[in-house]
Image 1 (cartoon, one colour):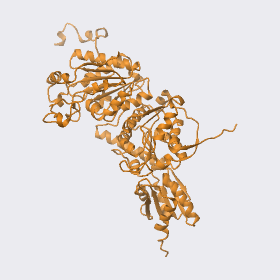
Image 2: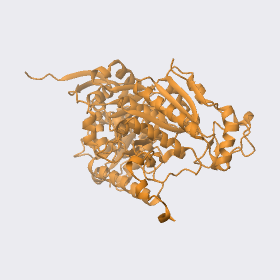
Image 3: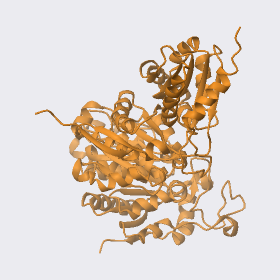
Image 4: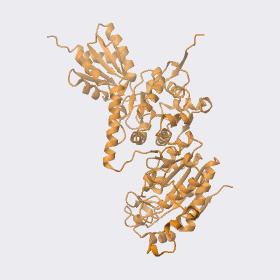
Length: 260
Length: 367
């Protein structure tokens, strides 16, 4: 078939025809995430922005325990793998001693809003000049789909098999709204990456967050509501639909705290 | 033009704090707890940012403190935290991660009586936790046992040097008495902090931002491949073996002609030193083996002395923890007994001498 085409591959693959390419800040390693998961897109958005802002040599990332524990395999930047929940403390240690570097954490909801609640709130409250990327999929993905602090009421998980009963299991925690109340946070927003339009909005939010850190404005916090089709036991398409219908009403997208 | 010595009267905790500043520390992260709160207080009043550029930060917990240390250590910085027993228990998670990621740092425990909230008085009941590894996994850390305020100061520089030589944690295992008592301390000149450029040159593994001249660096304790993870663990063990071969430190006090031997460290060693003098005044040939490194443990020296003496008495402010290592070194060659006071009580020199006499000398059966 190929030889019948009026134009050859060589003729197409010329530098002047290149309109889009993968950033070299993503390594060649195959992502360990499930097909349909948002992590890959979020990784790429962050790396694209760091690349475009020419910050590779100035960036130190911190990824604690969760699905993204192996982020250092995929991101071509210097990184530290932190203990479960402790990334904001690790990032504090880095940023305080390397104040001219761009320091970010990349945390899931179990990590940030359960085991790492104290580290998160106090890093935010101190106004640490770091950026937190918070991926909220309402479940513990890596350990096999257990109930998270963000699991919606009546949502079924491996440890709430009959649905989350808020009377015995507590309510989902809107930690993003909570930390937005703290004077140390400068920019707090909630985004998603399930459509092309949302990906673009997320990328803009990442750009803003990094700009504010460069300006020493304090802590910027970007939540990205994402799906966990494996944990939710849905196809990726079903999971995105379910996310729109159930997650977004409880975790509405948009800026929560913007600079005055 | 003779340089005058800088000698000051200081608490052990203050000497430690002054020691880390002068040893070129980049960052201290800590949380208040009795009996070591003077460390953070002293550092706070010293305006270290202006003095040397050193960062001092009061964290929200001991857990946060140790993970701030992790972050700084991963950048090749000279970082420190200190606490007392209950706080050190909280830090065990971090110690294990630091061991797995092979990060150098200096830790200090001003031990108080336990278990639980226990007491704020001096104790030595955290020996097992420090020497055998309190966190999960196969790891060790170098443990230094100061017996004076001067050593609280001196071991800061030694601790940093050992930490970076082996890419390991070093813990100064002090106690409430050494931390709180005041003695004279001779101070050294300020050692300048390393610049970022010097750190990058000295330690190529640090995470300071990936530059085009090298591959990315990452700090991790994770490897999901069991074959690779076993190799990594064997590498750790080889490092600990090397430390055992090279870094054993102890002090022999009146050991050359000793017929009876105390083995002790820290405050207990100070008590035993006096008991040796009292015993010798009575004509009893007693010596003291004072341990300076608890890991690595001086098994060989203990074995040598076991062949020379007629009895060994270990003195610890615990129910008997170090005695297990002494017995490993002695390996049945001579009788080893333990005497300890618990709950924050320090034994008196007369008390330990009396125990030595009761256990070994008065009961001696002459052929």
